[in-house]
Length: 128
Image (cartoon, rainbow, N blue to C red; front, side, top):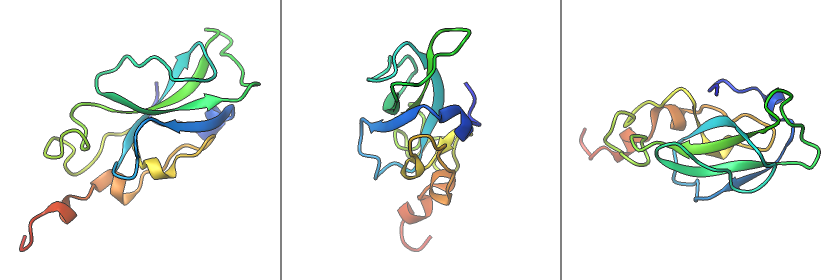
């Protein structure tokens, strides 16, 4: 799993499925996971929660070595900002964090000021 994905790794994607409303999320983590199906909710075996995933088109190829499909998952860990606003990512973000509003099928999401710095300034009490 690499946090530095390239669009060329995502050519088989046809749809992004969100399991949660993403409008309130500053960022999500993304990973390219190997799974045995092209479509449907993949098994999630990390701490935290699965926020979304991609479905592949009918002609997406299996990995030659493993026989599995590479699909993106979008998730949050327990210590991420949406779960723990005063935690380690109150300001800042993990390396694989991207703004969920920039995710499209076949396109790697983008790091934005919102995803990387958060809205701590907006949440700060007046006068600070």
